[in-house]
Length: 475
Image 1 (cartoon, rainbow, N blue to C red):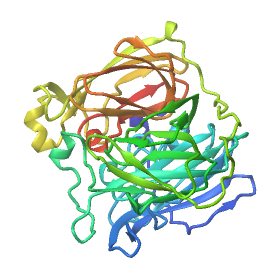
Image 2: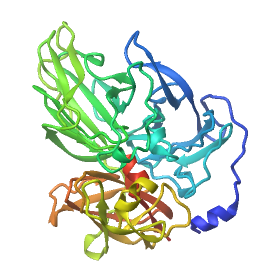
Image 3: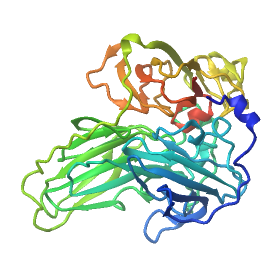
């Protein structure tokens, strides 16, 4: 039986108020793998010997600890809230979990109050590259540092010499290295979102400060996670061949990329054969219009090559078992996105009331609509964007009538991106987050096989807080 949001609110705080548990890692008698995440306050330097920056984070690090599972694992993650005066949750971005474990406040659970805990328990269904972060005031909590990588290993991984995980993000700091507390600015909500002034790779300031040392001939699997709250990355590594093998954790037909486009919330797995000369150096650069600059340095050791030619082993990953949508029999739905600083004066519904969006931008900090409705972050008692039955095959035509890009993320499901601007795609890859360009329409198809009310929102978190969020109810 599916629990509606109203039923959920009536059910009471059955898990609220539980005493916090100490950190640890163990395997329970029933085979469940136990992990503990502690959300708290701490300081961390962005460069070696540099000034300390204040963060909120998991287990006193940014990013939080890497959670590494195996496909089929039963896991239990206890989230302790050690934040002062701040509620939180943990959302498992990309994992297909039961609705009650999805970590969305007032939709799937009550927020975790300071000094309390919540136990997330689920079985891992898919291998791939995922991540975790709060869904409570995420426009502030994520850029403050509450995020971390989550890797699910394949049963039969491809052959590489080693694996590297880079979590990309940014932070906005003042001249003393302290975080600037201007979260929720109207200017950010109604434009590109809140961009930091320092880009981070695994919590360290991007540039020469981030170095990947390699040996010539080495094959590396590079997992990239965009945990930034608004920044879109376009990455290049000159003189190297970058082969994408997975998007959002799902296997794809391997293909060579000149640039790697990664919107907030999105992930890509790359296989890179590092074949340049020993002792040479190369730069990973971001060529996006808003953040041009060096991300990292690739430094070749002055040592004999591992091999003279690229490794000949195949790089095709085995596919996860996802329900295949049948577009021919699918039910079509349209979702229209409007608003933004350069948008027309759209008349929309704000918390169920007809309103001129631009008139209430300053008052309510709402700037975006989905199907002419804007919702406050996780506002209670709103109707879902649409209702579907379990087992329905669904096509969503996403129509972006704004002048801004939007990475749209669906919880609890993966979808195939089947068309852009009315034209079918050759590679109809699985995604959980699709980056819509300005004034573009995108068609995605999925099977609604996971019961519950699932968030569908822009992962530019200022946009989500500014109205671009809703739910899809699977009954």
